[in-house]
Amino acid sequence: MKIGVPKEIKNNESRVGMTPAGVFELIKNNHTVYVQQDAGFGSGFFDTDYAVVGAILVPTAAEVYANSDMIVKVKEPVAEEYPLIKKGQIVFTYFHFASSEELTIAMLESKSICIAYETVEETDGSLPLLTPMSEVAGRMAIQQGAKYLEKPIKGRGVLLGGVPGVPPGKVLVLGAGIVGIQAAKMAAGLGAHVTILDINMKRLRYVNDVMPSHVVTEFSSEYNIRRHIKNHDLIIGAVLIPGAKAPKLITRDMLKEMHPGTVMVDVAVDQGGCFETTVATTHENPTYIIDDVVHYCVANMPGAVPYTSTLALTNVTLPYVLKLANLGWKAATERYPDLSKGLNIVEGEIVYKELAETFNFS
Ligand SMILES: NC(=O)c1ccc[n+]([C@@H]2O[C@H](COP(=O)([O-])OP(=O)(O)OC[C@H]3O[C@@H](n4cnc5c(N)ncnc54)[C@H](O)[C@@H]3O)[C@@H](O)[C@H]2O)c1
Image (tube, rainbow, N blue to C red; front, side, top):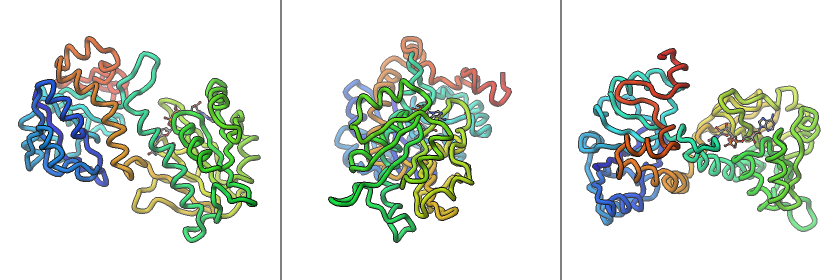
């Protein structure tokens, strides 16, 4: 099969859909790979790295699309990419169709085969192509939180690990899912005292089993949240109710109960946020302050660490890319039910029930 890897052109997106290691595997399997020049630059992969493993470097996105049976990307196509997508071409990427009717219509009109990373689903309901980005965001939440606790950027002036003779900072993590556990682990590694709350006892039991004793689990309730916010320095919002908006666990009135300079990182901002005062921010301008509380609410946190994020993402996408390339999309999705869940649009028809319902296309 001929596989194409265009350069991402969405604002602030530096990741790339395939690393030189992925190209190497595809070529080993007798496929041809077209990579747009500079596609990997933002993630630390140079054209020479791709060329050395056998990729064909082409200067424009138009040539990548024109030459390829399958396009492997990171973000959903933007308007200028729509006309490049061909009838019958496989497009394997994050689509998040539900948030854009325009994109959905454009892909229907293209008559391509759209396989969305975010809906590839294993039999236990887990989403293997979303997990690595939650892992990145969870770990990054502590790195960012520790930075914004510094006084010159309006934080409380607390060093999370403390020093001999001075107690460590206190981190409150709301949600013990993928983001929350990675955040707790990083905070614990820095020596901070960590309190992690969830409503799912299985998650709390797991955390209690695997984390050191300075990570304390508690059942999530408004009472417990109100009690803890008074004496924690960094609060991480990491809750998710699948398919729904995040519950507002920290309301505006609670900010007055916190120490001035407390930092709140709302990782759940992409689901509306779990703080009442959350407003989505960008990497250029990541924070704002309300009632002396620093808010960090960046909706695409992994975008700031494209080297790590690209590797984490392509580690999990490559096995699926190989199945699609080796078998073709029809046989691959028939044989692998997890991959078949990724099918959203096939040659002008919506095949993912929830998507059809979203826009009443059923
Ligand atoms: N901002 C970003 O860049 C970024 C990146 C990756 C993921 N995310 C988002 O982070 C959020 C968390 O993702 P995840 O992968 O950890 O989800 P997850 O499903 O693994 O974990 C969510 C946890 O929240 C818990 N929860 C639900 N209601 C709760 C409540 N009232 N109190 C406490 N806990 C509660 C659930 O029981 C679950 O354990 C999602 O909204 C996801 O989209 C954001």
